[in-house]
Image (cartoon, rainbow, N blue to C red):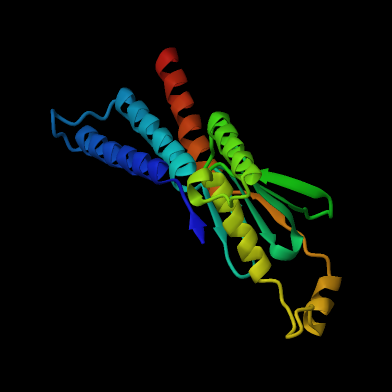
Length: 212
């Protein structure tokens, strides 16, 4: 399963299309003659900085679960935790994953994508408590997107725990369980570069323009 923000992706692609049209206008000349001045290059890197933000904020973030584990990709960092390392998955204001880190310490990551406002979360919890008192099960209408995503991930996690025919872990699973599973946290170099490089060049161009 893969969860992304539809609104974020639409906004990101809209900005990229806007930037491309401006690049063409600046260097080819649609609304006027092309200009290769310092101002033009400053505007170019300002647009590239916006493209970097569109990529990191709109296109990168996602939550993905597969047979091996869960991946939480935020704007600049990415967490990968095998199911054996996952301690808990919750869906409140955001989907949070608690897992064993590289050094064995418990870590927690909060997903950028699919966040719910505190008000919506409070209403969903109140509805759940009301239906629990009535002895009714909580249906899909009473869940926030984060609650439903966390439930799906927990079901996926339970489904991919190796079991023997008797329902107990088999020998291979037991042997594998003896090796402590740990998750990884790493910075995304392309994402960091997409934001920092245009920003640094833009600052340099502005300074040069002020000095000159």
